Image (tube, rainbow, N blue to C red; front, side, top):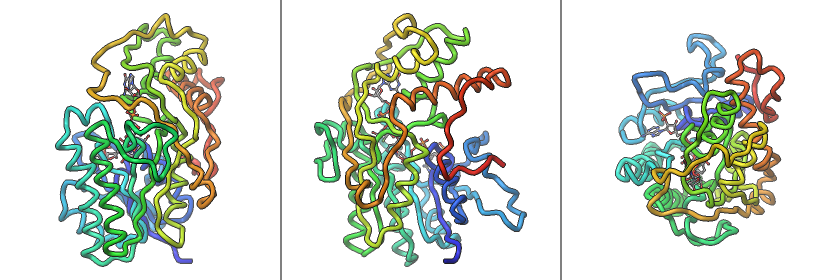
Length: 346
Ligand code: NAP
Ligand code: G4F
C-alpha cells in the first residue's frame, strides 16, 4: 500500500499530539493545522518536528483556523488527504459558558466548514469527528451509541450540532464520515485547567513544598477517565472499517472528582483533606453529574480495548508532574508507560 496522507486539525492539542505520533509511526505523511499565536503552541509535538527541508520529513504544519472557511478549503485542496481528523475545538466546558459564540463558531460550524470543503473539492477522503460524551449530559449512565443526547453546556450543544452535521453529510452526500464519541481521556499532556491535570500538578507541587492549597469546584461529579494515548488508536481504527459508523470509546468505569483527588494525593503520601478547598468560581451554571460509557461496540467491531484505568492514570499523571519538578533528581520516579506505537523522541 502507498503511504497515506492525513490532515489533523487540533494537532497542537493533547489528542492531536498522540494521534500525530501514532500516524507517523504507521508511515503516514501527517499535515497539521496550527493557529497563529504570539508564542509557540507546538510544545506537545516538538519531539516529532523535522526540518521541512529534510527529504524524509513526514510531519508538515500549516497556519489555519477553523473559523476561516477559505483557508480550510484551500488546505484540503493542497494537502489532498486520505484521512481528515477533526480534533480542533474550544474544548473547555466551563469556558464555553463564558464564550458561547466562539465555541459554536469553532466547535460546531468549524466542522461544517471542513465537511463542506471536502464535499466541494470532491476529495475521496475519510473524515473523523471528535464527538464527546458531554453530548449525553443529563442522560443517565451507562451511555452508548443509542443514548439520547441532553447536553448541559454550550460546548455540549455545539458538539451535538457537529455530530449531526457529520451524520448528515454521510447520509446526504455519501461521505465516509464517522463520529468517535469519546469519554474523558487524560494524560500528562492534558491542558492544565482540566481537573485531572490540575489535581496531578497540585499534588506534586504540594509534595515538593511549592504550594499548600488546591481550590476546586464540584467534587461529586463522576467521570469515566481513560488514557488519551490509547484513545487515538480507536480514532484510527474507525477510519479503517469498510463502512462508516459511530462509536463510543470509554473504559466503562466511574470515579468521582474526589476519588481522583484521593488517588493523586495518596500516591505521594498526602491526605487531600489537608490541602483541598472549595471555590465556587469552578462551578458551572449546569453540571454533567455522571458519565460512564458502554464501549462494547468499539470492542466488538474495532477490536479496541483500554488497558489504563483511572487509578493507574492518576498515578502516572502525578509521577509525570513529580519528574518534571524534580528534574534529574526525579530519576527514581516511574516513567509514564509508552503506548506500543510511541516513537522514540527525536
Ligand atoms: P485540546 O487539548 O483542548 O486541543 C484542542 C485543539 O484545537 C488545539 O490544538 C487548539 O489549538 C485547536 N483549536 C482550538 N480552536 C481552534 C480554531 N478555531 N481553529 C483551529 N484550531 C483550533 O483538546 P483535546 O483534549 O486534545 O481534545 C481533542 C478533541 O476531542 C476536541 O475536539 C475535544 O472537544 C474532543 N474531545 C475531547 C475529550 C477529552 O476528554 N480530551 C473527550 C471527548 C471529545 P491551540 O493549541 O492553538 O489552542
Ligand atoms: O476536567 P473537566 O473540566 O472536564 P469535563 O467538563 O468533563 O470536559 C472534558 O471532557 C469532555 C468529555 O466528556 C470533553 F468533551 C471536554 O472537551 C473536556 O475534555 O471537568 C470534570 C469535572 C466537572 O464535573 C467539573 O465541574 O470536574 C469538575 N471540577 C471540579 N473542580 C472541575 C474543577 N473542573 C475543572 N476544570 N476545574 C476545577 O477546578
